[in-house]
Image (cartoon, rainbow, N blue to C red):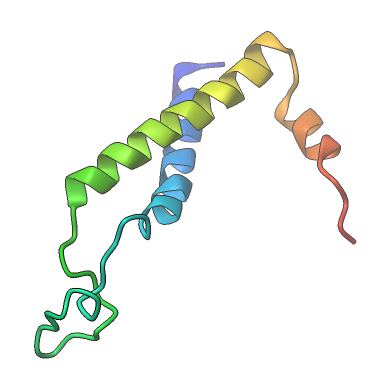
Length: 89
């Protein structure tokens, strides 16, 4: 796999994992009893940007490592992985 291809795949995985990791450990303003005027009560009380970035990077590296192992060392291609997925039609 070329470096650019690997980087592009990692970038896509990182963005998908970001939206999966975002709600973990979030306390809403309503739960913290500190609702700021002009915001919805379900808004985060304190947004920990660097914690989310770190969690996303770690999980993405693990997922990319699994992808790399399956495609490079086991010899499966992306088409093989798609063909092996169940058909829900």
